[in-house]
Amino acid sequence: MTPTISCTDLEVTLPGASGAVNILAGVNLSVAKAEFVSILGTSGSGKTTLLRVLGGLLPATGGEVRCDGTPIQGPPDGVVTVFQDYAHSLLPWRTVRRNVALGIEARLGRAERDERVDEALTMVGLLERADEYPWRLSGGMQQRVQIARALATRPRVLLMDEPFGALDAMTKASLQDQLQQVQSLTETTIVFVTHDVEEAVYLSDRLVVLNGSPADIGLTLDIPLPRPRHQISTKERADYLELRHRVYEALGHTVGEPARG
Amino acid sequence: MKAKKERGGTPIRGLLPLVALLVIWELVGDPASPYFPPPSTWIDGIQPLIDADKLLPAIGQTSLTFVLGLAIATALGAIVGTLVGASRSVDRALSPSLEFLRALPAASLVPVAALVLGYTTQMKLVVVVLPATWPILLTCRTARRTLSPVLLDTPRTLGLSTWHRTTKILTPALTPAVLLGVRVAAPLALIITLLVEIVTRVNGLGAALGAAQAGFLSAQVYGLLTIAGILGFAVNWIVTRAETSVSRRMRGTV
Image (cartoon, rainbow over all chains, first blue to last red; front, side, top):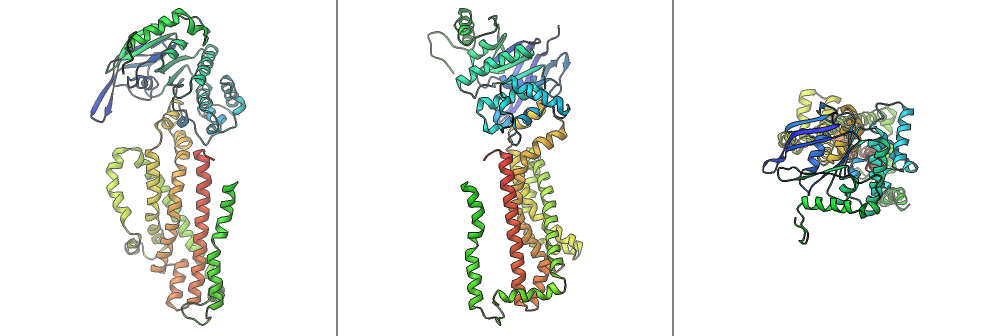
């Protein structure tokens, strides 16, 4: 089976203040259909760069990126990125409904567009706020609007760049559960960037840890926890704790020693 | 509620000192004075222009030059400002020339423009457009430069065409900055319009003002000055109101 989205020998060099900086080197990743893969790493490790390359927002310097077997140039159809900075991603001059319609309004007729927008807003539980402006909503709700906007395009792959990074712990937990539901409903492939170990273990089918400079994939870990997962019971399981332990170790933490970096 | 009251109240209350001054002038002024004729004589002063059917065309010509000049300056400033702000290398290549042109006093353009285009409306337009473009170009350049990268990535990841990216994202996002520039450029454009008309006497309110001054028709000069003042006040009021209301909508703040 061809993977939905993959990269082989990926290399990315970006211009920096003091010459070119090699961010990623020799990254191999392939994500299967309906799989939930998290990319973990300390800040500055190149997680976001990797996601931007997969989303076609940044060209690779070397190696190959494919989506459904086709090499990508620019953002491929059906691959949508959800950004951490929801405040700048939503258009303040459009209502929630019209923000969600942004990706589909040029391609679909009025009736189908409205239907898809309603469907996407229902999935994130914001249908009754459809006619408000996004800046009147809380941070968590704004991020749900951005997710709904991506879902309205019925994406094959959803790339999420620390989507819950700017939210408080309780909002984060409820959005994580909502995202699980959405994925089981739509069978969307999700690549999820985060620096939160618990979040990555809780949500993923598989997680990869980026380390080094230039970064490559240091650890790949399957997460065989049963689904649906639950914020309390899943996080109390011995195998959850064991997986969490291994990820922390891969990130450079050692038991009995204070965290470094 | 408070803001609404302030907006409605300020122009009227703020005009009171001016009204008081005019009343005092009317009461103590000498109708025969060659320098300071009282306000009641001003209407008689411009009456000959109305009778000769010259006043309305003059206002029309001035307004046309002003509106057209400002419109061209807005389009030019917005487009060039966006392009310059979008690319560091273009910015670096053009900025010194732009800075030089910006520092060029508008009035000094009159002789050159008159030399090339003669005493025509086109000449007036050229002289008005150049200085009025700068404030719009500069605010637009800064706004484009500081636009959030996420806002530019959003339409790309959603697969919007270049045309839709421009019309649905870039244009609304930069409109407040363009209007801020227009707000600064509008009074400037009106001043330059009148200045060119006074200097070259091509046509318009400024030409009438210049002619009245040359003919020692002091009451007419004051009458025309009042009309020019009202025109300027109206322009300023409209542009400010438009800028505030559109900015509020586009920036999403109450």
